Image 1 (spheres, rainbow, N blue to C red):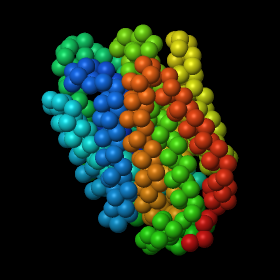
Image 2 (image 1 turned 90 degrees about the horizontal axis):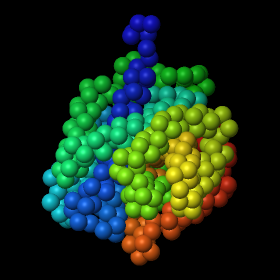
Image 3 (image 1 turned 30 degrees about the vertical axis):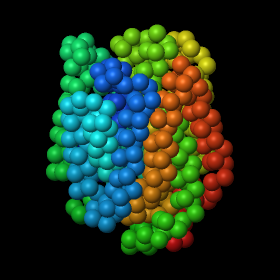
Image 4 (image 1 turned 90 degrees about the vertical axis):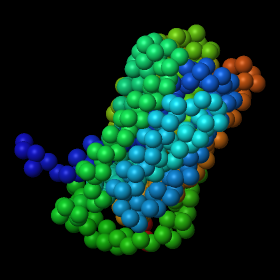
Length: 415
């Protein structure tokens, strides 16, 4: 097949996946695998380690809403690439941190860049793919985080063994350099919408063309006055709170509570990456078929089971089953939420809607690490923190039961 025959949507999807790899995979989840060595190097306890994660997530929260709105107003391309460049700079500077305060500043900067790039790139998928393929496209895009886990799981322990006390700094330098390179690539390849190069969204049909025209304008009130969008945000909070505890302290808990080495913990971290590689694609596609509401309910229940197993089954087999279960569903909720925003408000306003519900998600993930770290220091174990994560995921599952099915099963909203 000649390159000219490939619809540009696939190129957008490939670059978008790499953007997620840099913005979230390295900028956020890279902290999980680097944390034990970084914590030792900077003399931090678990409470401080949690606060450091919170700083990153607070930065993400601050820019995610603004980034989505700016992308809807000025186009995603500039916002995405500038955001990723900021995130890359923050990672480079994290490697130069000399103490807790400087680390907070640079991790917050990294989070700001991540929020400004990740939310718009997920919204971009809604412009390039028709409604019936949005779950599919969003599912592939979120696999960028999986690629990062596969990359960092074995790579960081190797770097730490090569450079000893400086290994965590070298890791951040590498992460930052990769993110900056991806920002440059994204600037030259990304396009805001298919019409910019004379194309239509992949899979578009006549009926959707007519309905899409009804949402072409920037009707900001539709985002902030929509009861469905607000409720989606509340449900999204449960995911942000619960999974961030799991991902922040996964490696540290394996080492501190499970007796794992850095290398063996890194390998299990990589297992999450491999099993999560297609999770967004699978569950995003499932949501295209059986509806967003039912799919969200199933995924939240699996998360609750995974987190409780990690807390209660303190053995390699328990940790492994937990990692596999989480991996099979890891990034599916953001993919489904991105697709749902496109369903509810149309492709033009999808980045703004996703940015708005990310406000709730971001609050959840921002406060979770500090709470979990404080609990771990007080109790001497991470198990209660993981049980808290499990309970919050269960609340998320219950919350999905009250979502309006007509809004989450690819039905057109009346705006």
